[in-house]
Image (cartoon, rainbow, N blue to C red):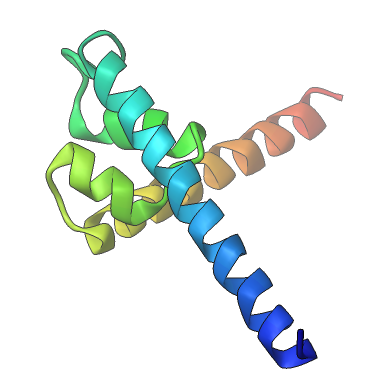
Length: 96
């Protein structure tokens, strides 16, 4: 086998493996969606699915929104979390 062919074959197999992994995650989430996501807000659903390691695109598909909306919401949540952590650090320093 030629080295270039082997490289392309390995790359293709890795890409295929990643896609299969994503499909497995979607099937697992979809089959448990009733229990995990039922009654949760879209924001909570996005957080849960993100914590499970799903891509923004897959999260958007499951939640019924766009990948851009998922990205924006996760970014907002990350900023709020960072702000809260910084406020806690200030409180801790003031308590000393």
